[in-house]
Every structure is written in structure tokens, then in C-alpha cells.
Amino acid sequence: METANEIKSALKNIRYYSKQINELSKKQFERDFEIGHVTGMNPEPGSVRFDCLGAIGTATHWIETYCDNIEANVKGAESQDQKLRPLRARRN
Image (cartoon, rainbow, N blue to C red; front, side, top):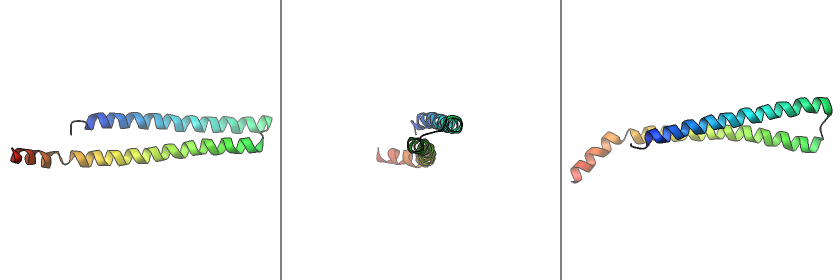
């Protein structure tokens, strides 16, 4: 499969940036939590903020699941190379 390496490279980049997003959302969550203890926090916006940061973390886990699925399907597609090529030769 000619594009397999490019797809794998793109997956590596997606995983890297997804991990970065997850770490940054955790960092912001912790900052907000610490500041809230010191200065106080308006409960309604604070709740929405924490919900949003939690949803970002959850989304990054889904991205990882989708990347796993793509990776498995690339392997499946690659495994068909040897079976696919002889068929082309027979048609000619």
C-alpha cells in the first residue's frame, strides 16, 4: 500500500497533538481549581468551565480510539497487497 507510511505519519502527528491538548486541558483545570480555592469562583461559570475542560479530555480519548481503528485498518489493507497484485497480473 503506497500511502501506508504517510497515513501512519499523520496518525503519529494526530496522536501527538491530541496528547498535547489533553495535557493542556488538565493543566488549565488544575490552575482554575487552585485559583478557585484562593480567590473563590462563581459556581455556575466555574461548573461550565470544568465541564468543558472535562469534555476536551474525553474527546482526546475518543481521538485515540479512532486512531487505533485507522491503524488497524491500515494493517488490514496492507495485508492485502500480496493478494491484490497477483489478481492484476491475471487480468492482463
